[in-house]
Length: 456
Image 1 (cartoon, helix red, strand yellow):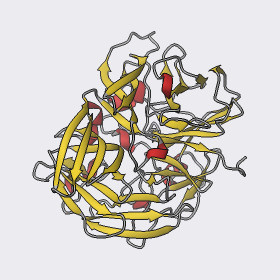
Image 2: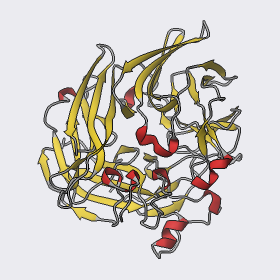
Image 3: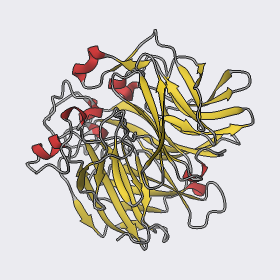
Image 4: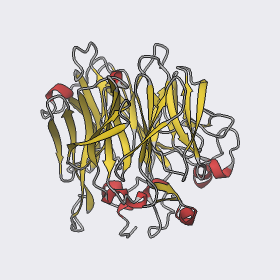
């Protein structure tokens, strides 16, 4: 396909086949205690899209997974999530109970495990889908479903201390969002409906020990943009605000901030009367249809609940996204954070050049927020790398005692590696590179899903 749409070429170019590979070759040594699956979701166009009109986030979700056990990489699989439309296109029967076509889409934002089950997640009231262990689609499900029509959001946050799963869900065109709390088995425990005038796009949120932090941005629902498939647009008249909701219940307190969009949250915690919130901040004028042109930075907001003020501070100027923290530190003070650094570039390649002609100069970053330092593990101009997921060591003795796992492109092989970095030797050689037989396009979010005692 000849196209100038950057989200159909280079590092974003969709793959066209589903692949199963066993006994993957490994350079280095996989930590012996890792027993589970590394899973990542992302848009992957079916090949029928109009290149002139295609928006990356409209590609149906494809989940890429590697199963690890006893120091071996047992398999790699990539599978489209079979929404009704995807199943029809592939000539397969639809899975599960029928779904309102307006709410049926192959979730493409996140894939996560809960209570021994696997879920592909999205937002906007679109139904989650449940997947089998080997990534086959079981069908749409009601994870986090409430009578008001909300369901678990792609950026649900697990509190490691209470084992509650928190979600902040929005509906397209609704002036309310809903805070949903699920127990460790996926049952809804309580909900709070929150008025958000102007229909803001509320993609992520933060959690502390006693509060939920909301981000109300000038990116708002726009009926005029419905034909594009992504009905949101920057609105200069909409104020940017941060809301604080007590987890125990009560009204939301709102604090104004400079115009921006919070892409994703690294973490948040309480420091006396202040809430410390570390976020990836997209600047004023963010275009949701061409996010690759934005230059987000890592910022810290200190919300002074007593004085009713916010102090904004830049932590790192380098362009970065997809921040992650040690999952044991969610909602509690953290020293370290991780992110993917990326600069979009255009580098015309010859017809025999195996490298993509557009992609990302990529690195994974480790922030030491106590010392104010940053380490970068560089993958080179054509070594596009996605979100890094932190996995603690078997018996960790420090916050950064563990590993960062991510898919990274190997331009010499023209295929991806699952790279495992030692977080305490961040710039050193990877502990292991698991060599996949195919390319993995840049995608969105994923998780390490450890096996339970009864998991095969």
